[in-house]
Length: 117
Image 1: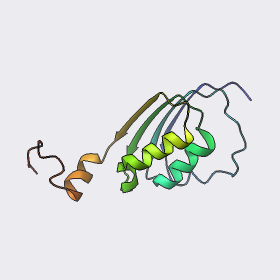
Image 2 (image 1 turned 90 degrees about the vertical axis):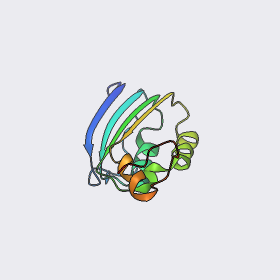
Image 3 (image 1 turned 60 degrees about the horizontal axis):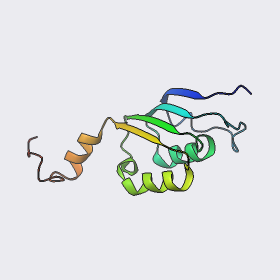
Image 4 (image 1 turned 135 degrees about the vertical axis):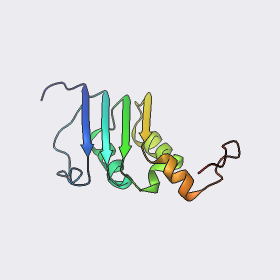
């Protein structure tokens, strides 16, 4: 197996997460992962991180088209990172629907934000 250090995955969907278990490769040299998630449940994403990307130092995530509210839970992210990603130094996340989630589910989340539709 080559010494893969950086990996970019785009448009990952639920069907992609049905990989063979246990994951057949050890990605020992992988340090940076960028991924675009499209309709992947947080539980499936979490298992993918634990199985394949637990050694990474840099993780960039872009989430589009996802209504799974677990992605909005800072406790879930903290638990995943602290428990399963000991080498992580950079964590960068962009959630395409976060503003819609806040407006739809908690209109007065931040009193400093103007209440405009």
